Length: 278
Image (cartoon, rainbow, N blue to C red):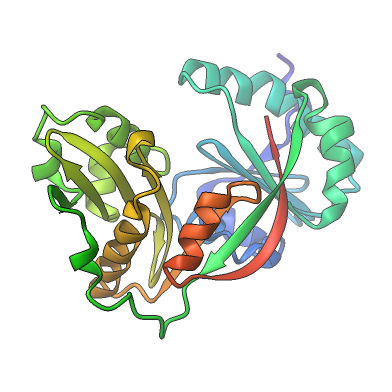
């Protein structure tokens, strides 16, 4: 591989110089967390001294910002994706990733150059936020069905190795963190246990100062029982006790159950944005 065709990569100490490029993506807490050094990431730019375009890579998420008109940089990004990103994801046992971008002008170079060989598909996504004054439903804990228990996602829970779906929970804990221990040190979560089975979990993501985003999953056979809403209430209550005042929620536009859960829990629709999935 000829490294000269790859884009320039910044040292973590220089990430701050891309902040103006990512300013329009403030609703993506991942970007804020990356720039503040809380989320391990790599950032590539068109010019290390005066960047006009940048790509942030953290796990399976990519954020692209700045000017989309630099053909040389776009071609270098295409090389990065085909030669590094794909190999990295295959080695990690993953096969998909998401590319979010601002402004809208990135759509054409993404399709014709950057991800052309990876057959990207564009989908709409939605962002919701919880107003600070929103309170959970009255007596929401009483709505938990008999035989179901809310528990914190902590070391004590993880020690219960007999629980079904525990490995799936650990995998989700590492989706935005480099390890389970890093999640336990820097994030928080709740789950619902039914017998010897995890029925679902709700986790904080990209914790940054007084903000976090929410990742949630309910095991299929436990869906349509309002468990996701109850877990959301529990996570918000836990977060507020830890000083979190701003909660964000991202989902695909076609994910009607996720959007319905967010609205039921008091979140409000803030904006829609496009993303590529491959």
